[in-house]
Image (cartoon, rainbow, N blue to C red; front, side, top):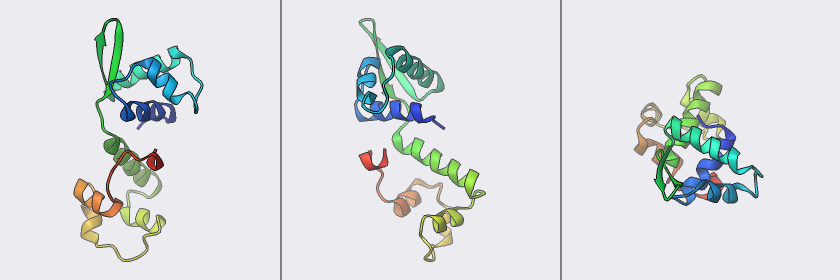
Length: 130
């Protein structure tokens, strides 16, 4: 699970990569006015956690995502279901306003990416999701 700051940095990386620390700092500057060294530290930690891949070119690190947006989103939703709905996807779907009868086979197989896409719709890196 990513912190809000880590997620903001990953959003910048998902939108444009390969990307440098300075480019990320500029991309997130409207929302977060952070020092270069702060962004560099967080990106280094994301690299150590396995969320980013980096390559050194001419004394500059270029970063690319190692984990896709959909994977991070899915993990966050599953964590929310586990923490707030006692792992019940039925309770979560009811909370989200899907009170109509949902096929229980679909809910049982929600870990299957195709079933998730059928319920949640197409996964895209849309600004509304970020």
